[in-house]
Image (cartoon, rainbow, N blue to C red; front, top):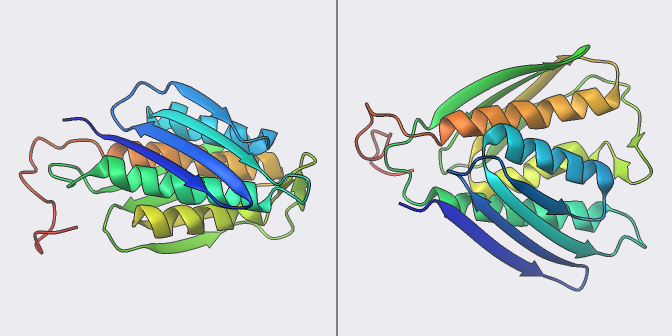
Length: 197
């Protein structure tokens, strides 16, 4: 069974192509024009063992908001498409990932019900590099969750360096999603007493 998703999304602000293979090997080809965001998407693909292609052009002459937001929307849509009927998957998963002084914890439920709980240390630097506003991290996850239709809890109990704090979240998300969508030989059918996810 192929578990691939492909979404093309175009607006007056952006043009986005996302392709994802949940059963890939972590091959990544990403170009959004926002260097740090590209780096984070590469972490998602590599550590999730997802083959991931992302090509975005956007109105970066304004700022990076629309480019990042619309990419996250398309990523969520492609992920949901790739999941298919969710038969035989683990459904629940969690991961804790350290990155030097920062620690991120992610818990996910591929539930069909979008919900986000997100907390980071206060006092983070407002920018990483010239284009990435650190307030966008939560917005990326909001956009992904609402379109992928998953419940996602992300917590960073401590960390100092903004780059480390954000990157640890993406790596932990990758590991949790990797485990959540993996097939469980003990699961037959949909992993829910409702019979649907």
